[in-house]
Every structure is written in structure tokens, then in C-alpha cells.
Amino acid sequence: MTSELNDSGEVVELPAASNAVDIALDELEMVYAFIYARVGNRADAEDLTQQVALKAIPRLRQGAPPSAIRGYLFATARSVLGGFWSTRLGLSESELHEDLVMAKPTSGYSQESADRAALILAALSDNYRRVLELRFLHGYSLKEVAAEMRSTVGAVKVMQLRALRAAAKVRLDG
Amino acid sequence: MAETPENRVERIVSGLLRGRRLKLRGGDAEAKDAIIMAARLAAARQGPQRMNPTFRQRLARELETAPREGWLTRRAALVAGVGALAGAVGGGLAVRGLQEAHPSAAGRVIRPTNGQWMDVGALADFPPGGARLVKAGSVGAFVYRSGDQVSAVSSMCSDLPCELWWDGSKSLLACPCHNRNFTPQGSSIGDQYPLPSLDIVDVRVTAAGRVEVLGV
Image 1 (cartoon, rainbow over the protein chains, first blue to last red):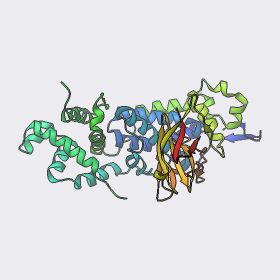
Image 2: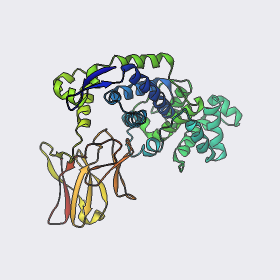
Image 3: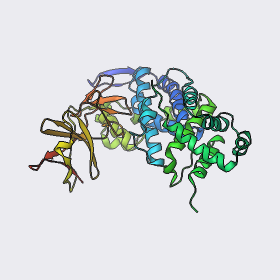
Image 4: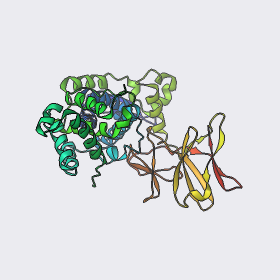
């Protein structure tokens, strides 16, 4: 335990730094999963999680309960993600509203991402669903998808773009 | 030759499926909806992810060794002075910490240097009891109309750099980053943790019935 002065000038005991760090790391695991589910790759997810951790340091030391720490970390994660997309693609926060706000922090490593993807794919036409399933869920190359769908690589490439755009338009309630 | 949208998206999809970082180029914004969806689907393929142990250790070291100033209480920060905080985790963070400790009852008034009144529409275009997002040059504001009176607050959250949106069903301004609301006059709602009030933007109605905002 360490001690320092509070607002009234009294000496108060603070939790050991290692405890605060352990709590933060557990929460940051969920932040990492949240971010990964939106950027789809480890390198970007690590960079953004690190940004969240550094931004949140002043809060983490205030002895707040884990639930409050989580709320702040996820708020920061949303902000960092918003900045990531807006910088790279010129998206405004309002355009990202559904993607960032609709997702609530969860206490475990949920299947949120996979479940959401399944619902989105289910809402697409057969061809669009098939091309995205083969490409993203089964990891087929364009050539393999073309062979499977009895089409050409060029046609599959166009279909992939259209399918992704159609998927982006799917709105999931709740 | 310019890259076609389908080639552009295939380049990004192919990188994602190989586990690579998102490398976006100028012009990729034209396919932004498809790119964001591709990132989500690539993530879904991998399932829920945990941090790599090496990365977790690195993060733990950074948290452990973060400058003590980064963890200061309000009292300690005031005693140490803002100057001492400049070398902490980041000047912006340190100042933000101070702001968090002083949630103000009323927001600051934005008075831009070389500001000028800018027309943002006729009063009749602003629905009574509603707020509308306007841009006065570089100043973004939500103009709220009550009868023939108007008031305006900044369109940016007071805590994080997030653009607010008007939730007409609640008649409140909503922050997408905090999932928290502000009144049209800028006061933070909820007691989970206090947020500073939104900055106030100068607004007026001219004799001709036009709404003007002090922008720059």
C-alpha cells in the first residue's frame, strides 16, 4: 500500500499499484477483444489498446471499482476507434454511431462478433452470402471462390465489393 | 491508372485475411462502408481474441512504470502545479485529468479570435423544442430553439473528442463515446461520473429573422 494526501490534506492509503494494474489488464483484455472485433487484425488492435491504456492511466489510479474503470475504458476505446476510422477514411462519429455505441461492454469473451456476422450474412441474398462466407469464414482465395461459384475472378471481385456494401447496409435491431 | 473500387477492396481484404494491419491509401474512403465491414468479417473469422502474452506483458510494464504524475489526485496535481505535469504521460492527458477533477457547472463560452457572425439559416428552419447541428466556419454547434429564443452549445463532447448527435426522442444531446446525454443547454446528465458542461457558443437572431452563430 502507498499513501498520499487527499483533498482535505489527510493521508489516505491507496491500493498497491500492482493491484490497480492487474485490474486494468483484465479490463483491457475485454477492450482488446472489442477493438479487434472492429479492426480485424492484431497489429492495429494492439496499437489502439495501448492508446486506450495510456489515455486511461489517470483514471485507473483513482481507486474506482472495476465497473467504473470498465465504463471509462470502453468510452475511451470508442473514442480511439472513432479517431482511427475518421483519420483513415474520413468517417464522422455519427456515421460510426451504430458500430460503436450499440456494442455494450461485456463481462466475458463473448461471441458478439461472430454472432453479429452470422446475422448480417443471413440477411443477404444467396450469392452475396456465399461469396462472403467462402472468402471470410472459410478463407478461400478469390480463385477458389470463383471455381466454387463457377464464375471468374473478376466477377467474384466485383461481387465481393457489392456483397460487402450490402452487408454494411444491414441493420440489426437490439 | 486509378485503382478500381473492387481492386481497392480486394487489396484490403487480402491483407486482412493474411492477418496484416489495415494499410489504407488516399481514395480508399470511397469504399469505406465495404472496408469497415471487411474488417468486422475478418475479425469474426478469428473468433473472440485475447491479448498476445508478450503484448500483455509489455502493457503491464507500461502501466507499472507510468510516471507517478500520471496517477496524481487533484490535490497532488494542484500542489505540484501544471508545469510539473508537462512531462507526464502526455500534456493533454494531464490537463484532461485536471478538467475531470473540476466539472464546471456552466461551460466556457467559445469566443474565437477574429470571430464573425455567420448566417446558419432562418429561425423558421429551426424546429421549436429541437436542436439542429450547424457549422459556422470551424465552429460546430447545436442550436436549440425555444419559442423565439435560441441558444447554442458546442457539437463536441466536453470530455472526449467525439461529435454529439441530437436524440429527438429524449430531446437531449447524446455522446456516442460515453453513451451519456447532455441537456440542450449543455449540462451533463447522469451521476455515474460527472462530465464537464458543454462549451457555450454565441448565437443570435437578427431583426430579419435569421439565426447567426459566432464562428471563424
